[in-house]
Amino acid sequence: MPTRTLLLVVCSLLALLAGAHAASAGRQKLVVVVAKGSPVTSISLTDLKRSFLGDRVTVHDQVLVPFNTNPRTPERAGFDRSALGMSPDDVGRFWIDRKVRGQSGAPRDLPSVVYMAKVVAKFPGAIGYLAVDALTPDVQPVQVDGVAYTDPAYTISMESAAP
Amino acid sequence: MHRQVSLVAIVGLAATRLAAAQSVAPSSPVPAPAPPPAADVDLATLGLDPSGGGSFDDKLNVYGFADFTWSNTHFTHPTPYAHDTTTFALTNLNVYVAKNLTPRWRTLAEVSFNYVPNGSTNADGTTFVTSASDITDFSRTTQWGTIAIERAYIEYDLTPHLTLRAGHWLTPYGIWNTDHGSPVIIGTYRPYLIGEQLFPEHQTGLDAYGTTPVGDYKLGYHATISNGRSETEIVADTDRRPAFGGRLELEAPWAGTLKLGASGYFGRSTGATTSATVAPEIFEERAYAIDAQWDHGGLHLQGEAIHRHKDYTDGHRPLTLAGLPQVDGDDLGMYALAGYRFTRLWNVMPFAYYEDYRPLVPGVLGDIKAVNAGLNFRPLATVVLKVQGAYAHGDNSGLLHTNVVLLTTQAAWVF
Image (cartoon, rainbow over all chains, first blue to last red; front, side, top):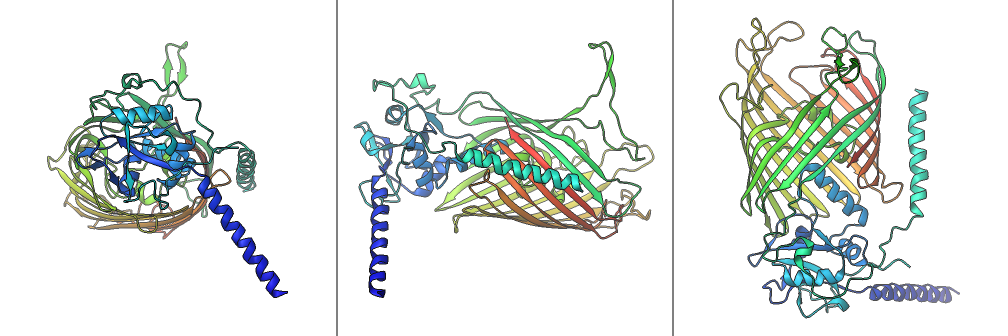
Protein backbone atom coordinates (compact mmCIF):
# COMPACT_ATOMS: atom_id res chain seq x y z
CA MET A 1 0.00 0.00 0.00
CA PRO A 2 2.75 2.48 0.86
CA THR A 3 4.50 1.51 -2.38
CA ARG A 4 1.36 2.28 -4.43
CA THR A 5 0.97 5.62 -2.69
CA LEU A 6 4.60 6.45 -3.35
CA LEU A 7 4.21 5.50 -7.01
CA LEU A 8 1.13 7.69 -7.28
CA VAL A 9 2.97 10.64 -5.76
CA VAL A 10 5.97 10.16 -8.06
CA CYS A 11 3.72 9.86 -11.13
CA SER A 12 1.82 12.98 -10.14
CA LEU A 13 5.04 14.93 -9.70
CA LEU A 14 6.34 13.76 -13.06
CA ALA A 15 3.07 14.76 -14.71
CA LEU A 16 3.28 18.18 -13.08
CA LEU A 17 6.87 18.63 -14.23
CA ALA A 18 5.97 17.57 -17.76
CA GLY A 19 3.10 20.04 -17.79
CA ALA A 20 5.30 22.84 -16.54
CA HIS A 21 7.92 22.04 -19.17
CA ALA A 22 5.27 22.01 -21.90
CA ALA A 23 3.93 25.38 -20.72
CA SER A 24 7.46 26.78 -20.69
CA ALA A 25 8.24 25.33 -24.09
CA GLY A 26 5.02 26.82 -25.42
CA ARG A 27 6.26 30.33 -24.77
CA GLN A 28 8.01 31.78 -27.75
CA LYS A 29 11.38 33.31 -27.06
CA LEU A 30 11.92 37.03 -27.45
CA VAL A 31 15.14 37.93 -29.19
CA VAL A 32 16.96 41.11 -28.21
CA VAL A 33 17.92 42.78 -31.49
CA VAL A 34 20.00 45.63 -32.90
CA ALA A 35 20.65 46.69 -36.48
CA LYS A 36 22.49 44.28 -38.77
CA GLY A 37 26.20 45.03 -38.67
CA SER A 38 26.10 46.76 -35.28
CA PRO A 39 29.18 46.20 -33.11
CA VAL A 40 26.79 45.25 -30.30
CA THR A 41 26.64 41.46 -30.33
CA SER A 42 26.28 40.80 -26.62
CA ILE A 43 24.94 42.70 -23.63
CA SER A 44 24.71 41.97 -19.95
CA LEU A 45 21.24 41.59 -18.48
CA THR A 46 22.13 44.41 -16.07
CA ASP A 47 22.87 46.81 -18.93
CA LEU A 48 19.78 45.67 -20.80
CA LYS A 49 17.63 46.43 -17.76
CA ARG A 50 19.33 49.76 -17.18
CA SER A 51 18.80 50.80 -20.77
CA PHE A 52 15.08 49.98 -20.66
CA LEU A 53 14.66 51.55 -17.19
CA GLY A 54 15.88 55.02 -18.06
CA ASP A 55 19.67 54.93 -17.66
CA ARG A 56 22.03 55.95 -20.42
CA VAL A 57 23.93 52.81 -21.45
CA THR A 58 26.89 52.75 -23.81
CA VAL A 59 28.11 49.50 -25.39
CA HIS A 60 31.10 49.54 -27.75
CA ASP A 61 30.94 53.36 -27.82
CA GLN A 62 27.35 53.10 -28.98
CA VAL A 63 24.71 54.82 -26.84
CA LEU A 64 21.75 52.46 -26.84
CA VAL A 65 18.32 53.84 -27.69
CA PRO A 66 15.70 51.40 -26.39
CA PHE A 67 12.35 50.90 -28.10
CA ASN A 68 9.36 49.08 -26.64
CA THR A 69 6.34 47.55 -28.28
CA ASN A 70 2.86 48.64 -27.30
CA PRO A 71 2.18 47.89 -23.59
CA ARG A 72 -0.80 45.68 -24.43
CA THR A 73 1.17 43.22 -26.53
CA PRO A 74 2.45 39.82 -25.38
CA GLU A 75 5.93 40.88 -26.52
CA ARG A 76 5.95 43.85 -24.14
CA ALA A 77 4.45 42.00 -21.20
CA GLY A 78 6.89 39.14 -21.72
CA PHE A 79 9.90 41.44 -21.98
CA ASP A 80 8.91 43.43 -18.89
CA ARG A 81 8.44 40.27 -16.89
CA SER A 82 11.31 38.08 -18.10
CA ALA A 83 13.97 40.73 -18.76
CA LEU A 84 13.08 43.51 -16.33
CA GLY A 85 11.48 41.30 -13.67
CA MET A 86 8.42 43.55 -13.50
CA SER A 87 4.70 42.95 -13.86
CA PRO A 88 2.58 45.36 -15.92
CA ASP A 89 1.47 47.03 -12.66
CA ASP A 90 5.10 47.35 -11.51
CA VAL A 91 6.05 48.95 -14.81
CA GLY A 92 3.18 51.45 -14.61
CA ARG A 93 4.13 52.46 -11.07
CA PHE A 94 7.82 52.69 -11.95
CA TRP A 95 7.35 55.21 -14.77
CA ILE A 96 4.71 57.27 -12.98
CA ASP A 97 6.95 57.52 -9.93
CA ARG A 98 9.85 58.64 -12.10
CA LYS A 99 7.67 61.40 -13.58
CA VAL A 100 6.80 62.67 -10.10
CA ARG A 101 10.49 62.66 -9.22
CA GLY A 102 11.20 64.75 -12.31
CA GLN A 103 13.27 62.00 -13.93
CA SER A 104 13.40 60.94 -17.57
CA GLY A 105 10.47 59.19 -19.19
CA ALA A 106 9.96 55.70 -20.58
CA PRO A 107 11.44 54.41 -23.85
CA ARG A 108 9.28 55.02 -26.89
CA ASP A 109 6.49 52.60 -27.59
CA LEU A 110 6.20 51.50 -31.20
CA PRO A 111 2.81 50.68 -32.63
CA SER A 112 3.59 47.11 -33.73
CA VAL A 113 6.20 44.43 -34.23
CA VAL A 114 6.63 45.49 -37.85
CA TYR A 115 7.66 48.95 -36.70
CA MET A 116 10.04 47.40 -34.18
CA ALA A 117 11.94 45.46 -36.82
CA LYS A 118 12.16 48.44 -39.16
CA VAL A 119 13.08 51.02 -36.53
CA VAL A 120 15.77 48.82 -34.99
CA ALA A 121 17.18 48.21 -38.47
CA LYS A 122 17.30 51.89 -39.39
CA PHE A 123 17.71 53.98 -36.26
CA PRO A 124 21.28 54.47 -34.98
CA GLY A 125 21.84 52.76 -31.63
CA ALA A 126 18.34 51.30 -31.47
CA ILE A 127 17.78 48.18 -29.41
CA GLY A 128 14.52 46.26 -29.16
CA TYR A 129 13.09 42.79 -29.06
CA LEU A 130 11.22 40.51 -31.46
CA ALA A 131 9.63 37.10 -31.39
CA VAL A 132 11.77 34.48 -33.10
CA ASP A 133 9.33 34.19 -36.01
CA ALA A 134 9.36 37.96 -36.52
CA LEU A 135 13.13 38.21 -37.03
CA THR A 136 14.12 39.84 -40.31
CA PRO A 137 17.42 39.91 -42.22
CA ASP A 138 17.82 43.60 -41.27
CA VAL A 139 18.28 42.93 -37.59
CA GLN A 140 20.93 41.16 -35.55
CA PRO A 141 20.26 39.02 -32.50
CA VAL A 142 22.15 40.01 -29.36
CA GLN A 143 23.33 37.56 -26.72
CA VAL A 144 22.21 38.36 -23.19
CA ASP A 145 24.77 37.56 -20.50
CA GLY A 146 26.59 35.58 -23.18
CA VAL A 147 23.58 33.35 -23.91
CA ALA A 148 22.18 33.21 -27.46
CA TYR A 149 18.46 32.92 -28.01
CA THR A 150 19.02 29.48 -29.54
CA ASP A 151 20.41 28.26 -26.23
CA PRO A 152 17.87 26.48 -24.00
CA ALA A 153 19.21 28.57 -21.09
CA TYR A 154 17.90 31.76 -22.72
CA THR A 155 15.07 33.05 -20.54
CA ILE A 156 13.54 36.08 -22.25
CA SER A 157 10.19 35.03 -23.64
CA MET A 158 6.81 36.32 -24.70
CA GLU A 159 3.86 36.39 -22.36
CA SER A 160 1.18 33.86 -23.20
CA ALA A 161 -1.68 35.59 -24.99
CA ALA A 162 -5.00 35.80 -23.21
CA PRO A 163 -7.35 32.94 -24.18
CA MET B 1 -13.86 58.07 17.44
CA HIS B 2 -16.81 56.25 15.91
CA ARG B 3 -16.52 58.48 12.84
CA GLN B 4 -12.85 57.60 12.43
CA VAL B 5 -13.54 53.90 12.68
CA SER B 6 -16.45 54.20 10.27
CA LEU B 7 -14.39 56.02 7.65
CA VAL B 8 -11.56 53.52 7.87
CA ALA B 9 -14.06 50.69 7.59
CA ILE B 10 -15.71 52.30 4.56
CA VAL B 11 -12.36 52.83 2.83
CA GLY B 12 -11.34 49.23 3.57
CA LEU B 13 -14.68 47.83 2.40
CA ALA B 14 -14.63 49.90 -0.78
CA ALA B 15 -11.07 48.77 -1.49
CA THR B 16 -12.04 45.14 -1.04
CA ARG B 17 -15.12 45.37 -3.27
CA LEU B 18 -13.51 47.36 -6.00
CA ALA B 19 -10.44 45.12 -5.97
CA ALA B 20 -12.72 42.12 -6.27
CA ALA B 21 -14.54 43.79 -9.16
CA GLN B 22 -11.21 44.62 -10.78
CA SER B 23 -10.01 41.04 -10.45
CA VAL B 24 -12.66 39.85 -12.91
CA ALA B 25 -11.55 42.36 -15.51
CA PRO B 26 -9.11 41.02 -18.08
CA SER B 27 -5.59 41.93 -17.06
CA SER B 28 -3.58 39.62 -19.30
CA PRO B 29 -1.95 41.12 -22.34
CA VAL B 30 -3.92 40.78 -25.51
CA PRO B 31 -2.50 39.76 -28.87
CA ALA B 32 -1.10 42.65 -30.86
CA PRO B 33 -3.48 44.24 -33.33
CA ALA B 34 -2.97 43.37 -36.96
CA PRO B 35 0.22 45.11 -38.05
CA PRO B 36 0.22 47.58 -40.91
CA PRO B 37 1.59 46.48 -44.27
CA ALA B 38 5.20 45.51 -43.99
CA ALA B 39 6.25 48.16 -46.44
CA ASP B 40 9.16 50.32 -45.45
CA VAL B 41 8.46 52.29 -42.32
CA ASP B 42 9.33 55.95 -42.68
CA LEU B 43 11.09 56.95 -39.46
CA ALA B 44 9.97 60.54 -39.93
CA THR B 45 6.34 59.47 -39.54
CA LEU B 46 7.27 58.26 -36.06
CA GLY B 47 8.98 61.54 -35.25
CA LEU B 48 12.41 59.92 -35.51
CA ASP B 49 15.36 61.52 -37.25
CA PRO B 50 17.30 58.79 -39.11
CA SER B 51 20.52 60.65 -38.26
CA GLY B 52 19.90 59.79 -34.63
CA GLY B 53 19.49 63.40 -33.56
CA GLY B 54 15.78 63.11 -32.98
CA SER B 55 15.69 60.13 -30.64
CA PHE B 56 14.84 62.23 -27.63
CA ASP B 57 11.37 63.30 -26.59
CA ASP B 58 11.27 67.00 -27.45
CA LYS B 59 7.62 67.57 -26.61
CA LEU B 60 6.64 70.02 -23.91
CA ASN B 61 5.41 67.77 -21.11
CA VAL B 62 2.88 69.23 -18.67
CA TYR B 63 1.75 67.01 -15.84
CA GLY B 64 1.40 67.05 -12.10
CA PHE B 65 -0.03 65.58 -8.96
CA ALA B 66 -2.57 66.48 -6.31
CA ASP B 67 -3.88 65.03 -3.10
CA PHE B 68 -6.93 65.28 -0.92
CA THR B 69 -6.75 64.41 2.76
CA TRP B 70 -9.06 63.76 5.67
CA SER B 71 -7.39 64.02 9.07
CA ASN B 72 -8.33 63.74 12.69
CA THR B 73 -5.86 65.15 15.21
CA HIS B 74 -6.31 64.46 18.91
CA PHE B 75 -4.15 65.90 21.70
CA THR B 76 -4.11 63.58 24.69
CA HIS B 77 -3.72 66.47 27.16
CA PRO B 78 -5.59 69.77 27.04
CA THR B 79 -3.50 72.61 25.69
CA PRO B 80 -4.37 76.26 25.12
CA TYR B 81 -2.30 76.41 21.91
CA ALA B 82 -3.76 73.57 19.92
CA HIS B 83 -7.14 71.89 19.67
CA ASP B 84 -8.44 68.64 18.33
CA THR B 85 -9.36 68.93 14.68
CA THR B 86 -11.23 66.86 12.14
CA THR B 87 -11.06 68.17 8.61
CA PHE B 88 -10.91 67.60 4.88
CA ALA B 89 -8.19 69.44 2.99
CA LEU B 90 -6.89 69.75 -0.53
CA THR B 91 -3.26 69.64 0.49
CA ASN B 92 -1.16 69.67 -2.68
CA LEU B 93 -1.58 70.69 -6.28
CA ASN B 94 1.75 70.63 -8.10
CA VAL B 95 2.25 71.16 -11.82
CA TYR B 96 5.39 70.16 -13.73
CA VAL B 97 6.57 71.59 -17.01
CA ALA B 98 9.43 69.64 -18.58
CA LYS B 99 11.14 69.70 -21.94
CA ASN B 100 14.24 68.23 -23.53
CA LEU B 101 15.64 71.19 -25.43
CA THR B 102 18.23 69.05 -27.24
CA PRO B 103 19.57 65.59 -26.46
CA ARG B 104 21.91 67.23 -23.91
CA TRP B 105 19.92 70.22 -22.63
CA ARG B 106 16.83 69.77 -20.42
CA THR B 107 14.63 71.95 -18.30
CA LEU B 108 12.15 71.21 -15.53
CA ALA B 109 9.92 73.47 -13.45
CA GLU B 110 7.60 72.38 -10.66
CA VAL B 111 5.12 74.83 -9.22
CA SER B 112 3.05 74.20 -6.12
CA PHE B 113 -0.31 75.96 -5.85
CA ASN B 114 -1.27 76.64 -2.25
CA TYR B 115 -4.27 77.98 -0.35
CA VAL B 116 -1.94 79.30 2.35
CA PRO B 117 -1.73 81.77 3.99
CA ASN B 118 -5.53 81.55 4.02
CA GLY B 119 -6.54 79.50 7.04
CA SER B 120 -3.15 79.54 8.75
CA THR B 121 -2.94 80.30 12.46
CA ASN B 122 -1.45 83.56 13.67
CA ALA B 123 0.90 83.77 16.66
CA ASP B 124 -1.94 84.98 18.89
CA GLY B 125 -4.12 81.99 17.98
CA THR B 126 -6.38 83.82 15.54
CA THR B 127 -6.87 82.64 11.97
CA PHE B 128 -5.39 84.40 8.99
CA VAL B 129 -7.98 84.98 6.28
CA THR B 130 -7.14 86.21 2.80
CA SER B 131 -10.08 88.13 1.45
CA ALA B 132 -10.47 90.47 -1.45
CA SER B 133 -13.41 91.81 -3.38
CA ASP B 134 -13.55 90.37 -6.86
CA ILE B 135 -14.34 93.23 -9.23
CA THR B 136 -15.07 90.75 -12.01
CA ASP B 137 -17.88 89.21 -9.95
CA PHE B 138 -19.92 92.14 -8.55
CA SER B 139 -17.18 92.72 -5.97
CA ARG B 140 -18.10 89.61 -4.10
CA THR B 141 -15.58 88.40 -1.55
CA THR B 142 -13.07 85.81 -2.68
CA GLN B 143 -10.12 84.14 -0.97
CA TRP B 144 -6.71 84.04 -2.56
CA GLY B 145 -3.73 81.79 -2.12
CA THR B 146 -0.10 81.62 -3.20
CA ILE B 147 2.21 79.72 -5.44
CA ALA B 148 5.60 78.27 -4.53
CA ILE B 149 8.26 77.40 -7.06
CA GLU B 150 9.44 74.02 -5.84
CA ARG B 151 12.14 73.77 -8.48
CA ALA B 152 13.08 75.37 -11.76
CA TYR B 153 16.32 74.54 -13.47
CA ILE B 154 18.18 73.83 -16.66
CA GLU B 155 20.56 70.91 -17.10
CA TYR B 156 23.37 70.14 -19.50
CA ASP B 157 25.13 66.79 -19.96
CA LEU B 158 28.81 67.71 -20.02
CA THR B 159 29.80 64.06 -20.38
CA PRO B 160 27.86 60.78 -20.08
CA HIS B 161 28.81 60.80 -16.39
CA LEU B 162 28.58 64.49 -15.52
CA THR B 163 25.52 66.73 -15.73
CA LEU B 164 25.42 70.33 -14.57
CA ARG B 165 22.14 71.60 -13.13
CA ALA B 166 21.62 75.33 -12.58
CA GLY B 167 18.67 76.97 -10.89
CA HIS B 168 16.47 76.21 -7.89
CA TRP B 169 16.46 72.52 -6.96
CA LEU B 170 15.57 70.11 -4.21
CA THR B 171 18.60 69.37 -2.07
CA PRO B 172 19.91 65.93 -3.08
CA TYR B 173 19.97 64.12 0.25
CA GLY B 174 18.19 61.13 1.71
CA ILE B 175 15.13 59.59 0.09
CA TRP B 176 12.05 61.66 0.80
CA ASN B 177 13.42 65.13 0.25
CA THR B 178 13.73 64.63 -3.49
CA ASP B 179 10.91 62.06 -3.61
CA HIS B 180 8.58 64.69 -2.24
CA GLY B 181 5.42 64.11 -4.30
CA SER B 182 2.54 62.59 -2.37
CA PRO B 183 1.97 59.75 -4.89
CA VAL B 184 5.47 58.37 -4.25
CA ILE B 185 5.38 58.81 -0.47
CA ILE B 186 4.14 55.61 1.13
CA GLY B 187 2.35 57.25 4.07
CA THR B 188 -0.06 60.16 4.00
CA TYR B 189 2.81 62.44 4.99
CA ARG B 190 6.58 62.23 5.26
CA PRO B 191 8.18 61.51 8.63
CA TYR B 192 8.12 64.64 10.80
CA LEU B 193 11.92 64.71 10.77
CA ILE B 194 12.10 65.27 7.01
CA GLY B 195 9.94 68.39 7.14
CA GLU B 196 12.19 69.88 9.84
CA GLN B 197 14.81 70.64 7.19
CA LEU B 198 18.02 69.69 8.98
CA PHE B 199 19.28 70.04 5.41
CA PRO B 200 17.65 72.89 3.47
CA GLU B 201 14.73 71.50 1.46
CA HIS B 202 15.64 73.62 -1.57
CA GLN B 203 18.74 75.47 -2.67
CA THR B 204 19.54 77.91 -5.42
CA GLY B 205 22.82 77.44 -7.26
CA LEU B 206 24.67 74.70 -9.11
CA ASP B 207 24.46 70.93 -8.76
CA ALA B 208 26.98 68.78 -10.64
CA TYR B 209 25.84 65.19 -10.64
CA GLY B 210 26.17 61.93 -12.47
CA THR B 211 26.15 58.17 -12.35
CA THR B 212 28.48 55.52 -13.62
CA PRO B 213 28.00 51.76 -13.82
CA VAL B 214 30.65 49.54 -12.27
CA GLY B 215 29.79 46.00 -13.25
CA ASP B 216 26.40 45.22 -11.79
CA TYR B 217 26.68 48.20 -9.45
CA LYS B 218 25.81 51.83 -10.05
CA LEU B 219 27.63 54.71 -8.42
CA GLY B 220 26.18 58.19 -8.25
CA TYR B 221 27.25 61.53 -6.87
CA HIS B 222 26.20 65.15 -6.41
CA ALA B 223 28.36 68.19 -5.64
CA THR B 224 26.53 71.42 -4.90
CA ILE B 225 27.26 75.09 -4.34
CA SER B 226 24.45 77.47 -3.48
CA ASN B 227 23.24 80.58 -1.71
CA GLY B 228 22.74 78.40 1.35
CA ARG B 229 19.85 78.65 3.77
CA SER B 230 17.76 81.75 4.39
CA GLU B 231 14.22 82.94 3.87
CA THR B 232 15.28 84.79 0.74
CA GLU B 233 17.86 82.35 -0.65
CA ILE B 234 16.01 81.99 -3.95
CA VAL B 235 16.87 85.57 -4.92
CA ALA B 236 19.77 86.62 -2.70
CA ASP B 237 22.76 85.24 -0.82
CA THR B 238 22.25 87.32 2.30
CA ASP B 239 25.71 86.67 3.74
CA ARG B 240 27.68 86.38 0.48
CA ARG B 241 29.02 83.03 1.67
CA PRO B 242 28.18 80.05 -0.48
CA ALA B 243 27.12 76.76 1.01
CA PHE B 244 28.56 73.45 -0.15
CA GLY B 245 27.10 69.98 -0.22
CA GLY B 246 27.55 66.55 -1.68
CA ARG B 247 26.14 63.09 -1.92
CA LEU B 248 27.40 59.63 -2.81
CA GLU B 249 25.07 56.80 -3.83
CA LEU B 250 25.55 53.10 -4.42
CA GLU B 251 22.99 50.81 -6.03
CA ALA B 252 23.71 47.10 -5.73
CA PRO B 253 21.82 44.03 -6.97
CA TRP B 254 21.99 42.26 -3.62
CA ALA B 255 19.02 39.91 -3.23
CA GLY B 256 16.87 42.45 -5.01
CA THR B 257 18.01 46.04 -5.13
CA LEU B 258 19.90 47.78 -2.35
CA LYS B 259 20.46 51.54 -2.48
CA LEU B 260 22.77 53.30 -0.05
CA GLY B 261 23.43 57.03 0.22
CA ALA B 262 25.49 59.43 2.28
CA SER B 263 25.08 63.21 2.13
CA GLY B 264 26.66 66.29 3.66
CA TYR B 265 25.97 70.03 3.78
CA PHE B 266 28.01 72.92 5.16
CA GLY B 267 27.05 76.56 5.25
CA ARG B 268 26.08 79.65 7.17
CA SER B 269 22.43 80.46 7.63
CA THR B 270 21.73 84.17 7.84
CA GLY B 271 18.16 85.13 8.54
CA ALA B 272 16.59 88.09 6.83
CA THR B 273 16.38 91.30 8.83
CA THR B 274 12.66 91.82 9.36
CA SER B 275 12.71 94.05 12.41
CA ALA B 276 14.72 97.10 13.44
CA THR B 277 14.91 95.84 17.02
CA VAL B 278 15.37 92.07 16.69
CA ALA B 279 18.64 90.74 15.30
CA PRO B 280 18.26 88.02 12.67
CA GLU B 281 19.24 84.47 13.55
CA ILE B 282 22.68 83.50 12.25
CA PHE B 283 24.41 80.15 12.63
CA GLU B 284 26.99 77.93 11.00
CA GLU B 285 25.65 74.46 10.25
CA ARG B 286 27.11 71.12 9.35
CA ALA B 287 24.67 68.38 8.43
CA TYR B 288 25.23 64.72 7.57
CA ALA B 289 22.77 62.06 6.52
CA ILE B 290 22.75 58.42 5.57
CA ASP B 291 19.95 56.50 3.91
CA ALA B 292 19.23 52.97 2.76
CA GLN B 293 16.53 51.25 0.72
CA TRP B 294 16.14 47.57 0.01
CA ASP B 295 13.55 46.08 -2.32
CA HIS B 296 13.14 42.35 -2.55
CA GLY B 297 10.03 41.27 -4.41
CA GLY B 298 7.16 43.00 -2.65
CA LEU B 299 9.22 43.76 0.44
CA HIS B 300 10.36 47.35 0.88
CA LEU B 301 12.60 48.56 3.69
CA GLN B 302 13.94 52.07 3.99
CA GLY B 303 15.45 54.34 6.58
CA GLU B 304 17.19 57.65 6.98
CA ALA B 305 19.30 59.16 9.76
CA ILE B 306 20.18 62.85 9.84
CA HIS B 307 22.45 64.84 12.14
CA ARG B 308 23.07 68.58 12.19
CA HIS B 309 25.34 70.71 14.34
CA LYS B 310 24.57 74.43 14.78
CA ASP B 311 27.02 77.06 16.01
CA TYR B 312 25.22 80.34 16.63
CA THR B 313 26.85 83.72 16.20
CA ASP B 314 26.76 85.67 19.46
CA GLY B 315 24.19 88.40 19.31
CA HIS B 316 22.18 86.40 16.81
CA ARG B 317 20.96 83.55 19.00
CA PRO B 318 17.23 82.86 19.29
CA LEU B 319 15.68 82.79 22.74
CA THR B 320 14.62 79.55 24.37
CA LEU B 321 11.14 79.07 25.88
CA ALA B 322 12.75 80.11 29.18
CA GLY B 323 13.91 83.38 27.60
CA LEU B 324 17.62 82.48 27.57
CA PRO B 325 19.92 82.62 24.53
CA GLN B 326 19.96 79.30 22.70
CA VAL B 327 23.22 77.38 23.14
CA ASP B 328 25.05 75.62 20.31
CA GLY B 329 24.21 71.98 19.79
CA ASP B 330 22.85 69.19 17.65
CA ASP B 331 19.67 68.01 16.00
CA LEU B 332 19.40 64.27 15.47
CA GLY B 333 16.72 62.12 13.96
CA MET B 334 16.01 58.84 12.22
CA TYR B 335 13.18 56.73 10.93
CA ALA B 336 12.90 53.15 9.72
CA LEU B 337 10.05 51.90 7.55
CA ALA B 338 8.94 48.44 6.44
CA GLY B 339 6.21 47.62 3.96
CA TYR B 340 5.11 44.80 1.72
CA ARG B 341 3.34 45.37 -1.62
CA PHE B 342 0.83 42.63 -2.45
CA THR B 343 -0.48 42.03 -5.96
CA ARG B 344 -4.11 41.88 -4.83
CA LEU B 345 -6.55 44.20 -3.08
CA TRP B 346 -5.55 47.12 -5.27
CA ASN B 347 -1.88 46.26 -4.80
CA VAL B 348 -2.17 47.02 -1.13
CA MET B 349 0.98 47.72 0.88
CA PRO B 350 0.68 47.47 4.65
CA PHE B 351 3.45 49.57 6.17
CA ALA B 352 4.77 50.74 9.51
CA TYR B 353 7.53 53.03 10.60
CA TYR B 354 9.13 54.28 13.75
CA GLU B 355 10.59 57.73 14.12
CA ASP B 356 12.84 59.30 16.73
CA TYR B 357 13.62 63.01 16.54
CA ARG B 358 15.67 64.99 19.04
CA PRO B 359 15.80 68.65 18.05
CA LEU B 360 18.20 71.20 19.50
CA VAL B 361 15.38 73.73 19.79
CA PRO B 362 12.47 71.79 21.33
CA GLY B 363 9.74 73.22 19.10
CA VAL B 364 6.20 71.93 19.47
CA LEU B 365 6.55 68.58 21.24
CA GLY B 366 10.23 68.51 22.20
CA ASP B 367 11.89 65.15 21.61
CA ILE B 368 9.47 63.04 19.59
CA LYS B 369 9.08 59.31 19.37
CA ALA B 370 6.34 58.27 16.96
CA VAL B 371 4.91 55.03 15.67
CA ASN B 372 2.98 55.01 12.40
CA ALA B 373 1.14 52.25 10.58
CA GLY B 374 -1.17 52.17 7.63
CA LEU B 375 -2.20 50.84 4.26
CA ASN B 376 -1.18 52.15 0.84
CA PHE B 377 -3.41 51.07 -2.06
CA ARG B 378 -2.34 51.54 -5.68
CA PRO B 379 -5.42 50.63 -7.77
CA LEU B 380 -3.88 52.39 -10.77
CA ALA B 381 -0.37 53.54 -11.45
CA THR B 382 -1.71 57.08 -11.28
CA VAL B 383 -3.91 56.77 -8.18
CA VAL B 384 -2.82 56.10 -4.59
CA LEU B 385 -5.18 55.71 -1.63
CA LYS B 386 -3.80 55.71 1.90
CA VAL B 387 -4.94 55.22 5.47
CA GLN B 388 -2.54 55.93 8.32
CA GLY B 389 -2.62 56.09 12.10
CA ALA B 390 0.10 57.62 14.24
CA TYR B 391 0.91 58.09 17.89
CA ALA B 392 3.53 60.73 18.68
CA HIS B 393 4.97 60.97 22.16
CA GLY B 394 6.61 64.23 23.23
CA ASP B 395 8.98 64.59 26.19
CA ASN B 396 7.25 67.74 27.47
CA SER B 397 10.25 69.98 26.71
CA GLY B 398 8.42 71.70 23.86
CA LEU B 399 5.62 74.20 23.64
CA LEU B 400 2.90 71.57 24.01
CA HIS B 401 2.95 69.14 26.94
CA THR B 402 0.90 66.47 25.26
CA ASN B 403 1.02 63.44 23.01
CA VAL B 404 -0.72 63.39 19.66
CA VAL B 405 -2.92 60.79 18.00
CA LEU B 406 -3.34 61.34 14.28
CA LEU B 407 -5.57 59.46 11.87
CA THR B 408 -5.42 60.41 8.20
CA THR B 409 -6.73 59.14 4.89
CA GLN B 410 -5.58 60.47 1.56
CA ALA B 411 -6.21 60.15 -2.13
CA ALA B 412 -3.20 61.20 -4.24
CA TRP B 413 -3.18 61.16 -8.01
CA VAL B 414 -0.99 61.97 -10.97
CA PHE B 415 -2.39 63.70 -14.04
